[in-house]
Image (cartoon, rainbow, N blue to C red; front, side, top):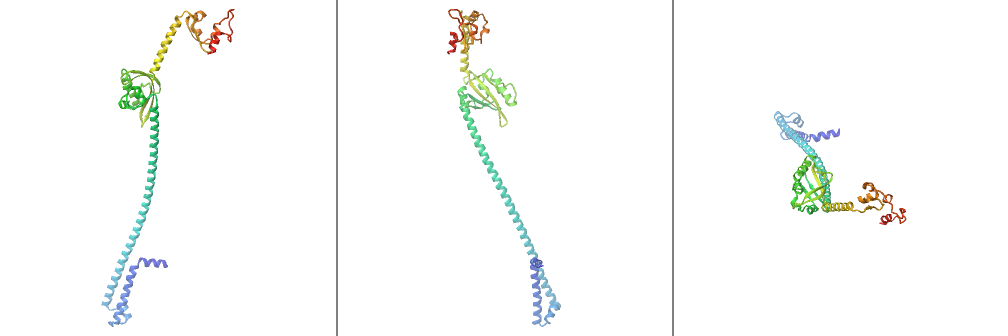
Length: 332
């Protein structure tokens, strides 16, 4: 009950003050007329004033009460405005805290993303540096061809092999290092493979011997291995090229020597054969085969001691462990 009364007084303070002032005015006016103007007794002046006095008092009391009501309305409105403003302040504080938390989270995520990106960039840079080191350290020429069939990578070994500098050959078509008579067809095949993923590009995934062309136009033989891949969704071909000019020269010289030796063996009148360390026949000339009564192919790979025995002066064949011919290849 006390709380209700306190609340009522708090909510109607201005009206109650105005009402109190009105009562004070009424009593003061009644006392004044009774004591000074002798217009009647005090109690009579309070409850039964003259008409003109009554109307004057009612007007003044009404004005006081109306003024108090207006003040109360203004105070109530002000209080409500303060409460609303306080609620807005609380709401704004909560919004600011929420937005601050969100911004802190965004900043933290952004910082983490920046750090992750830096780590990725550093890792990518390290991997690129490692790859560049491996490519530049390679003794074989390494070059890369992009989806336009243009050369985009040309290592130091490639510069030495083709006699082009990187500045001269980068962004040039692949045909610049192919023989003139086949340059156009090779260029078209590689372009088709890079654009469509299929075609007659027989180098991909294989190791082949092909002819290439240096800057001065001189052709040379090389062993090439090509592999296809993708960068940013675009096709890429990487080629490793090894110069086999000296090897080819050696192979040709060996073929010529073998041919000459074959001619010598076939033209010799004496029987000639060669054995390995196990006593197997590696080669034999027609004269030797004829002497032994075999065809050439029958002797190749056979144990010589089982085919032709070496005899002592008494005409008795040597046992294998005493045969001078067996001893000659077993001791080497």
